[in-house]
Image 1 (cartoon, rainbow, N blue to C red):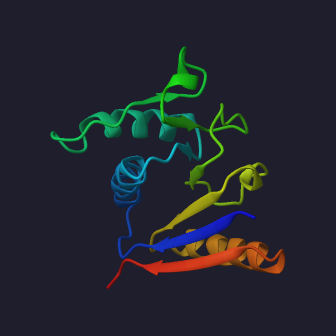
Image 2: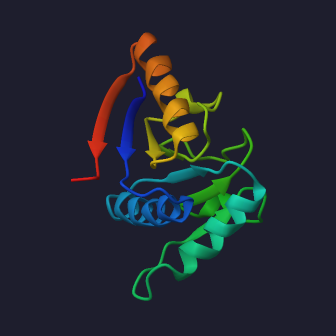
Image 3: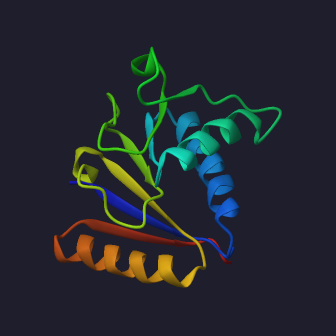
Length: 143
């Protein structure tokens, strides 16, 4: 059964969410995971694609957007639809809802920052997962 981790960030701006995603992706990649990042939309997917190349000068995270040639050959894919390529290990969800295909993954990371609409949506997501019996973990990054 899918394990779901909620990461609660202290930040109020979406840019902090994307920076955290880069760090989390790098950490998961070092542990040998394959990661699918579920973006909210195409613009966010492209912004994250660029940020993963630039976020740290001493870091290298091989990744492609879903739909690019050779996406099957990289450990990190970024998409904004239900097509998660061949990735079924870790999904980092940036949507304000639970994607329909979340249960294909071993783990799901929900990234929450301090914006009222997102907080409400993620509370609803927590209830959704809990009511269905998924293993939930809460990581308060504000400490």
